[in-house]
Image 1: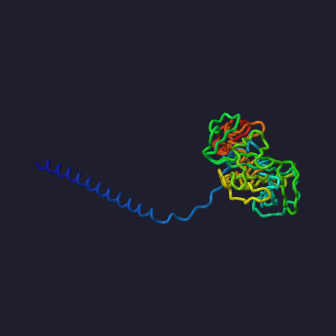
Image 2: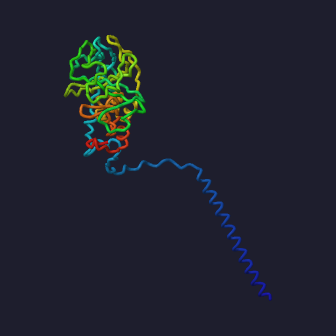
Image 3: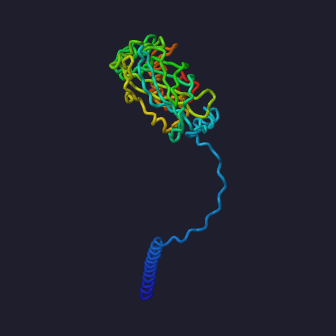
Amino acid sequence: MNQHLQKETIVMKDKLFRRTFMVLMLCFAVVVTGGLMIGCSGSDGSAGATGATGPAGPITETGESCNTCHTTNRIADIADYHPTVTNQLKISNIQVSSSVTGTPVVTFHVDTINNTTGAVLASYATMTYSQLRVYIADLVPAGAVTSPTGTSVPNLEGTLSTPYFEQWAYDNGKAFTNNGSGNYSYTMSTVWGSPTNTWFNVADIDVTPTTGHTQRIVLRAAPLSGDISFYGTANTGDFKVPADGTSATMLADQRLLTTIDTCQKCHSTKMLGAAHGSGYMDTKACVICHSPLYATTNDPAGFMAEINADLPNFIHQIHAAIPNPDFATWIW
């Protein structure tokens, strides 16, 4: 009996010892962990020494904006599209009048400027007739009945929902008057409203003095052939046809599809890579040709719309990288 009680006492003491030991170990673990956590809020110590420079990585092409055009089998070498030319012609002081015989006359001024800063460098007093092109377009109002011949574009066989320009006069290679100090005057070879191209639809045009449609004149001045010391330029002026022997009141821009500032965000002030944009320099000039009412000697009015080359469709198509079969040799 006594032996049995002694054995039970020994077992109970052993169990008590084990439990006490486990409690003590748990308490120790809690104390140590708390100390470590408190240590995390202390200083990280001073920075170590700078490590050695690693080996150079491989040179790769990102395929982003520059390489889209400037790489193998693309449009051009960088030097071709980003030359160091910084000077440009600038046309200003455009004024339109009508001669006593009813022909358009335009006077204007030409300077050379720094393309980056816009600073005028000098008056350009040596321009020759071969450097100048002159266009006039009629702003056909929305809702006006248009009846171009030979076109298969349905919406041109009736009315347009928005105003568009219809170019009816174009002159170049004709002598003009140099008035000195960069001032010039030019007399068109046709009277008001007499198209220089038989494909134009005369019925769309209204050149009634002071009350007819708004007209836009576009002047483009280019460098002499082979002269790469400066860029060409273009400028525009909107007006109502004046009475014979009088001057027009020049108007603020009457029709803008988009501003040139938008284009220059990517194409720069030189309009680099924008087809012949580097010669016309402003969307106000683009719209007189890239219009659903534009025609040429060989193409009837409406052909620009048929090939999606009217400005709104054309520009969106280019920047969405949508191929145009009529311009297969161009890379968008």
